[in-house]
Image (cartoon, rainbow, N blue to C red; front, side):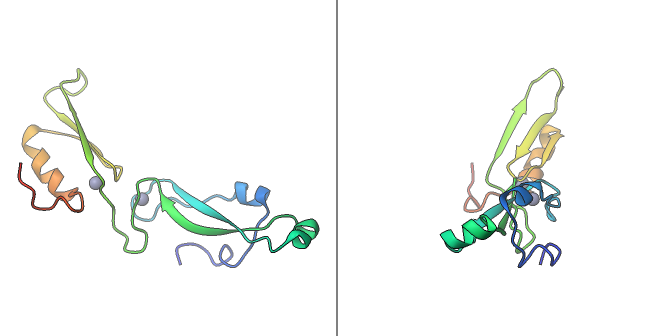
Length: 123
Ligand SMILES: [Zn+2]
Ligand SMILES: [Zn+2]
């Protein structure tokens, strides 16, 4: 498990759930969001205990695959020619990696951030 045992198998009220603090993504250090699952059994349960929630799937803002511990790259964008960049090219990947590279370095960076399904396409 990614997180401490006290979270799994525990239920929370809506207020408690909103106050939970999640650790950063173990893969990229980005922000995780956590699915909130309503486990309220029935109207009776709700009347007695209020609605109950448990933590469901964790998802990283950068779409990391948390099971395999790998970053996922959906696509890149590039920016060049800005006054702040000089001769550099600002490379941004959906995985959260942003860096300013020299023209000759972009190719190698793209190889690392290969978009699934685009492997081997020549341009
Ligand atoms: Zn991540
Ligand atoms: Zn990437």
